[in-house]
Image 1 (spheres, rainbow, N blue to C red):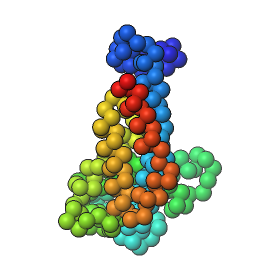
Image 2 (spheres, rainbow, N blue to C red):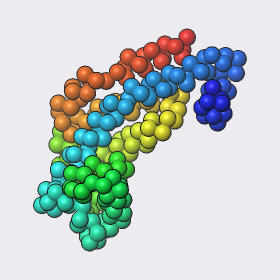
Image 3 (cartoon, rainbow, N blue to C red):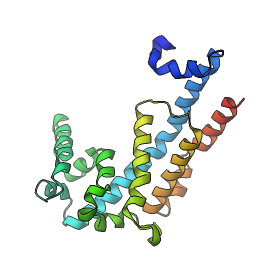
Image 4 (cartoon, rainbow, N blue to C red):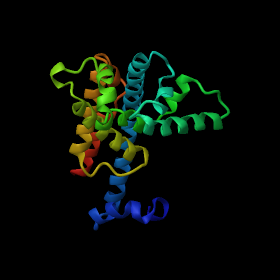
Length: 212
């Protein structure tokens, strides 16, 4: 396993089970299973967040090409680098640049970043409408950006095949946060997600095996 997956990647597993190599390998397998079970809902989270924010930006600037304003509006120029990179990727594929393709090409990091404190004064009064089902008493920028930043960081660990199963409570909290944020975007989305969500069964299996 060390030869295949690298000594560095497997070290923590073997160190945690110094007398049980089989269980160390099984923990690694369970980590992969739990990570894989989260892919579908993380993808739905990303798509719904992107589309909801894009809708409000289209309304703010009155055009589907709202990203063109980033290069000239004071305080937003730094975001233009990510738009330029997205356009470059589209061009390299030999495709025509369109608003929908640019929006789809922008990274999750971009969408999370525009909710951070540095853009609150310029964007938040418009972007708050991307979360119409959030309780009015909670509609503060940091209440949105905090869980979304955590989900983004967790998503990056998942997509880069990093270990996540050392803290099961944290994984379960992120799973809950995904439902919460999706519920802010659409009241029907959490129920839709349940139909494809295999995480509850997978994490229950992992718990049973790791605690045995």
